Length: 293
Figure 1: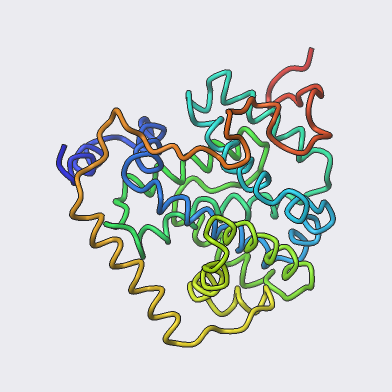
Figure 2: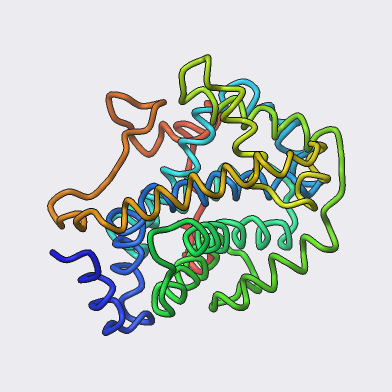
């Protein structure tokens, strides 16, 4: 398979009909590493809003079990998409996620913003550091995945286009980003998770590398200083060098999707394992539109 074979196929597809297949190719074949990095930075953008970080700081989930919290967030998305969002597996994952969120008072606009970070974050990372930018059909597929997740989670007013998500994200950050000590604490806990993936001697450098990729409004909201220009340049050049190398490698064959095993579950997991301990073995919350029995 040629490096651009899937891109040619995606351009011939209808994202309104084929968004789940396009999403699978983006996340498991074309950009698995880049998509994961975009999701990681999406976490940090969430913390720029004090109301969100204060809730996360209150639960202490990242401080007590940061790696599990990170893995669970990624795995919920995988569980919902693995067999199709309307499959029983996908809907069961949505019910479980809604049960967890149902314990807390979360505003609809905060749900929408967090959803927007997971749609826009990977798109902007891939366009900047991927081996190629996303095409229009891929952007629309990501937006439709976000819209479907909003439907399953009962999030009102979610866009169904990438332009809509980008405007939502940018407008909300402009009005809601502000420094709060909780922002800094939760961000530090997340940096500990991300840097723990590397040998101890490299961890301070990894944290500075990530900081060098963050924009000034987000750094101010999280309470971190601007990084030196040479650090930013080095980070960008390193990632673009990686993209140039990947561009020269063969496409991932269909028989070998990249599904990195989550660090918290080396021997596998069940849906009930995901989330905090208090949420396990509890009745599932019905999805919007489902009749309760």
